[in-house]
Each structure stands twice: as C-alpha cells, then as structure tokens.
Image (cartoon, rainbow over all chains, first blue to last red; front, top):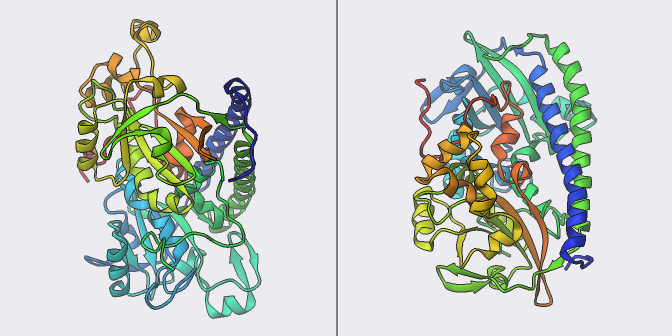
Length: 235
Length: 248
C-alpha cells in the first residue's frame, strides 16, 4: 500500500482543515474560470454540417433537439488507444463515455443536449454502442468537415506539415484526438462558444475526481490503466 | 438566452488562448491538491461499526470486499424518508457507472444510508443503479463523521423561519419533513486497509462533492449559460426519471 503517516483524529482534522481552505480556493478559482468561459464571444457558424443520426440526416442546428445549448463530444473511432477490428472505439473515449448516460437527464434539465460524434458509418457505431450498453445520442460525422473544423481530426496534409491542437502548434498531429465543443442556438443561428481538448475533458470524468480523493490516487505509472468497462479482468 | 458578444473566429481564438493558460493553471493546482490529499495522515478506525447488506451484517472491513481502498457516499435516505434525496440521486447517477473503473484501481465504491435496507433496495431498483448500498446499524457511523445532526442541533435552523426553498422542496420530494430531511448530511468518506487495520483517510461534503460526483456541473461550467442557479430560486435538480422539460 502507498506510503503514509498514521495520526490521531485531532492531527488529521488540523491537516484536513488546512487542505479544505485550499480546496475552497480552488473551487472559487474554478467558478471564476467558468464565468470567464461564459464571457467568450460567440462565433456564428456559417458552414453547413450534416450528420447521420438514427432517425436520418441532421444539421448541426437539429442536433440541439429543441434545446438552446449543445455539447458535442468528439469521440475517436477507428483510431485511438487499444483500437482494433473487434474494438473500434478508443479506450479513453469509451472511459469518458461511461460518464455520459448518468449526467444527460440533468443536462437536459438545464436545457443542454449532449451528443457524441465520430468519423465512422452509423452501422459501425451501433454495435459498439450496444456492446457497451450506452443510451446517449451518437451521430456519424463521416463525410463532414465537422471534426476537422473543430480541432479534433487532422487531414493527411496537416499530419504531414503540422496543425494546431489544443490551441498550439503540433508538428505531426494524430489523425484524431479527444475533445468537446459547445454551441448555442439563438434566432435559428448556431454559434460556437467553447472547445476543450486533452486534459480539458477530465472535467466530465468523475472517476478521476474520485481517484484524486482515494489514498493511492490515480496511480497512473507509465501505462494507461483504463480499459473498456467490459474488459477489466481479461488477459 | 444569456447576454453575450458575437465575435470573429480570430477574436474568439485570442480570448480562448488566454483562458486556456488559466485552465491549465487550475488543472495543475488540482494536481497539487491531490498530492496534498495523499499526504494527509491516516487515522485508524478503532470503533466497530455494523452494516446491513443484502449478504447479511458486515463490518467496515468487510465492506472493502477484498480491495484495499473504500469510497463511501453517505446518501441522504433517512429513516423517515420514503424516497432518496434528489440531489444525492443525481450524485448516484454519476457514481454508479464508474464502479468498474474504480474497482480496476482497487477501489470499492458504495452508498451508505440510515434508512432500512428494503427501502434502499427498492429505490435503487427504480433508479437502475448497479452499486452496493448498505444500511447502517444504529446511527454512530454517520454521526461520528458529522453526517447526522440531532434535533437539538437543528432547532435553531428549523425555528429560524428561514428554511431555504430547496430544503422544503427536497423534503417534500422525499415524503418527509424539513427536520427529517436535514437530519441527514451528504458526504464522501474514504478508507484504506493495511495489515488488517482500517484507516479513514479523507472526508468531504457540500461543494467538495461537485468535482468527483457531480460531473454535470463540470459540463454546465463549459456551456454558454453555465449553471444558472439564481439564489432566490429553489434548486433545479430532480431525480433522473422526474424531469419535466418545458414544452420543446
């Protein structure tokens, strides 16, 4: 077990109260940043994006499903961690996606729709979704520039000559990366309001939050430990 | 819709870059806090506690279920409740699907409440959560960590005439009264097992629960409107099968 000191309840309480001050400071900082996010200008989207959904073709405006705000998770499919023919969805994105179904009713309750998109035909997304037991809406962006335009996929030319990922230059970006983009619709016009990538998506992964409070922590080591939820304990 | 400016992609980008630097700073500070949490001393739990589970009566050590770490969410479902607290239920929606990933890190995650086991079980079935839920035998377990308040302690609050709308609303949703509702406290307590001894390592409550257990807040913090919780309005959170969205 991890190295640790043993103390009386009184000593623990003193240390815990000191830590609480810093936790509260961190929460307030986080509130301030959330406020700053809401101050970002909105960028009207003039390009037409079309997605394949279970009930036919949909525009970006239609993905809002009648609500005023939309979060799109850029789900890596056919490329990513431990991906092969039997396991086409990225393991990291699958880990993130395990958090979606629990929060969706509450997001919907705040007028927010959460959708995942992947560059793959719907027929390939469907069996994988069924296997993992997910209910969240997942659309195909195959044939659309959507994932490229919002910084989560890169053309061959970009992979060769470099591109921006997570708002900084990368010499040779991967074909796809994880990320999330936020949109608002007003008077029929869709606006892009926010995007985040890389560790920015940890915000939606409560498992890390819990491990950050467990005695051994994330215990990341050199290896990424996470698996698809039906693969733990397999050789 | 919320007040906002409209900008060009370039204007957005310039402001987003600045914000990213602050977000990264926040992430790093979060990592530092995690390190500090792991440096907290461990406190041996010497008292014997008993829990009623579907597999019979268990000790705190038994609840680890063979793993070395234990996360307990103190779910507000008191003896007078007919249904679980709606806010705790939203937290449970976040925790339950994470169980396989936490177990893979040698962490057992479960709920504990003071309500009778049969009520907890039927409520769990209604909500569709696949996670362990034990009923405390007696009240010491919650009381000792500060997640149970006595009538005497609550008297000034209950008689102040200033009971927040959220408390009244949530008490009603649980079919209990304000006194019964606020007797219970929400919280997370964390334990480690080493050489057969159980240690308490960490306890948190209130906004300390947001980051691990209320992922919808992290997402709402990234939407254009944000959480949108005016102080004079009762809390918007409902059980996941009770939302009635405005006509869309």
